[in-house]
Image (cartoon, rainbow, N blue to C red; front, side, top):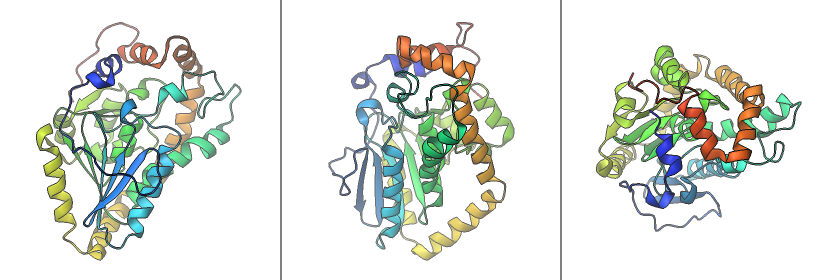
Length: 314
């Protein structure tokens, strides 16, 4: 599904509104990109760059990680609810910041020849570790997706323990076509090798109903019911003692980690740097600089044949 054409060509304030709790709460932690608050036994972590569909900037990963630490350190908190403010969960890395400038002017886009160690150690590994703070959180994390969870936004969402989506929300990793490799590598662990290949070899997006059907996320509900369904789940989880929640999560995480999660993520994070510095990656970044990232992404995702491509249904 080439839904990015709609996302990128439609002004943010014109996007169809979806059900989402209006936030009147202010961050208590001085974050720029995250709103952190607590309601009873539930910590709310809210991605807070709605003007850019909560695109990931240089500060968001570390602020996300710190907010998880805050929730884990609070004895009153038993569960974390993660979501995005505005019209979408997260539209991925902010390519206006990372791709439109001259090569070498922003993290993740070095002048050539590039240094893989610098990209891994200073840019992408810290981001991957920040997203994985959700997975490693001692307290369970429930994520709700409305609008879009694409590219790096899907990396964040899929590190959560349980994901609920709106039926009409979209998830996928379009940079798999060019200029990206999902560094958290959660796709194969959630849906298996063949379906993961189907999604990552095309970069196609799927909606919430399809994501739930193939097991990528736990549940899909009508957009108008997303908030109430997520609240019902976190309140049910919050009725269980913290010790019990910790025990169950650690047993399940251990089983997945024994399947090679850490080494898979290490390889994916190295490959992500390579995709941005390959001949095609360099050409894509130059195209972003010349025509803007929105037009460059549309060209990438439509494919050089100019058609819509096959159905994204699995």
